[in-house]
Image 1 (spheres, one colour):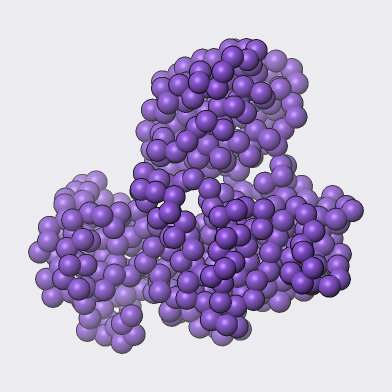
Image 2: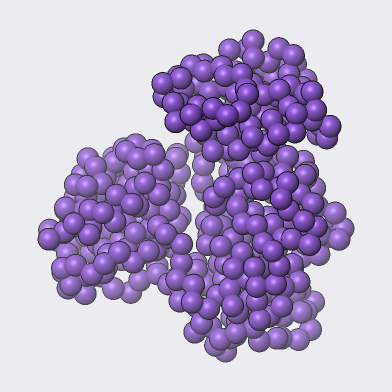
Length: 457
């Protein structure tokens, strides 16, 4: 990686949040930046305005190979597949690839906690950030919000950075955080990575460059996450729903307490009743946060303070309102069938499920089986409708769901739910697909769902 930036020429591909953040960092360090995006100038009017005070070269409306001329480094943003011809050609020419996450990891002057996983990473990152800020100046960001490259020059050696990493961001890193957590690895983003092997390898990259003094935090109840223990280079701390084996440090629930096992004896951290979040998956998120906190040597008081009063992150089993005698929940973050399964398992009440969106070439069979057992009314919407209904039909005969509705758009699905809901139900938006058939992202989908539910008369 280039350390002396002054006078270098860097190509950034992708003008979204990560690309724009990296532009500012590099320009402030004396870099000549070329910013390339397939969108047109008109489509990127807001971005161009936000970067109007920064001197850069814009190349928009496509990815011409000529932008590779005379560059020292190529930085594809997370949303840019490494298979596009421009990136492939850069590799053929022997040009080094990096991204904002890699550059941040190299530049960070303080300890970094990195968190990845197919599900739960934002909630876990948020809780760890709440824990850390009790005892240290803490910077929380990455995939969860603002790229931390925007703040790295403000960080001091005694600070703590807590970063969420997606598989897209991890594909190119050649540095690892001092504390690196892999919560779980379940099918996701196969439309981008092509196979579970490639997807798992991207996740595993967060551990690949750790040193002997670093710590890996792994979910021992998840087969793929736990398999990474074999390649861990430093200490391992685990988390799970059962007691860790003798000699293995880990966090688990025991007799009403969240408990830390040091390999020989147990230490109570705080009562389980302090956790306000619904669902077994959220219990695992809290266990993971405590294991990460232990790896970062945070005190028990900080762990408890981080969990106490925490009601969750928007769009993650977020309570919206009671209407028609039912509670309505927004779980728009569920962009894979596995996440919708976890959401369904968080409730005992009769379910009205809104599912669909855009598929990511993921399997829906387990989702369909659970729908047959647990869902009273299934409302399917969006591009994935045909695939979802085929999976539910193939799951075999069952009295559930009592009704199945197919809607073109989410707004129609909300109206359909309002027609079938009964007192005592839970109406759950947990799509299992992405939002990109109708919305900019899962947050926009969740916000519109919230709005439409609150407008029900």
